[in-house]
Length: 277
Image (cartoon, rainbow, N blue to C red; front, side, top):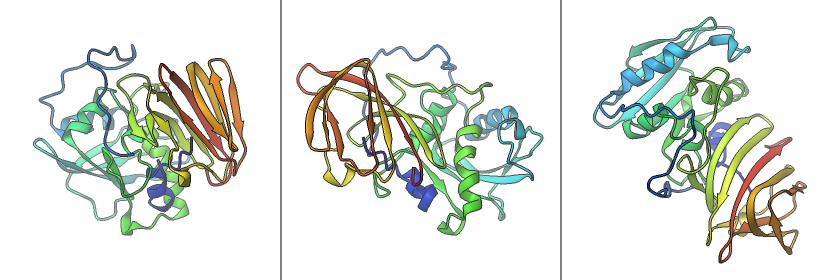
C-alpha cells in the first residue's frame, strides 16, 4: 500500500501525499460509539468552529506551541464564510470573522464536510487524503505563498490532528462510514507526523490498492497488519495470500500491491516510518 498521500504532498510540498471522490458507504451503518450523532444540519460554520475553538487545549495538545498563531478557514456553501481562529498556548482559542493577514496557514472545505467533521463521521486528515495533488479531496490545506517552510511543516501536521479533535485523550474514529477512497481502497487516517504515517484500510471485493505501478514503492519501510479477513498481495513480484493475524514488513523500495478477489474482504492497519514518511 503506497501511501504517498497528497495532503502530505501539500504539507511536505504543500503537505506530502495521500484519492479521488469519496466512495458511498453502505446505508444503515453503525458508527463507532464515540461518534457524536448531534443534528447539526442547521449549524453554520462559525458555530461549529467555535466548538473547536472552545475545546482547544493549547500546549497540553501541542507542547511545541510557544506563541499564539492564527489559522484561517474558508468554508463554502450556505452557512459558510471566512474566519480566523487564534490558537493560544494556554488555550482556549478565539474565533474572529475574516482572514487575518498574518495567518500561518489554514483549511479550505465545504459546510457539508465541516458538519461531517463536527459529527466525527470523518477526521480532518482523512478528509484531505488523495493519491495525487490533482485529485479532488473534501478538505484542502492552505499554505501562505504556497511554500512549506520547515517551521510550518513541523506545525501543520500536528495542528491538523490536534485542532480537529475535541476529545481528550484524543479519539480517532475509523471503520465503515468514516473513510475516503484512497489508492484503490477505503482509508481512514489515524495519525501523521514527520517520519510517521498510520492508517486503517478496508479492501472490499474488486478493490485493488496500488494497481498503478507508479504507486507500488516507497522510499521508507512499511508494516501492514491484517486484522480481519484476507486478501491477495504481490510483494517484490511474488504473489501470495495474506490472512487475519499476520503482519508484513515491506522494506523501503520493495514493490507491493494488495487486492480483494471474488469473495475476499480484508482490513489492514498500515504503519510507515523513517525519512520521507
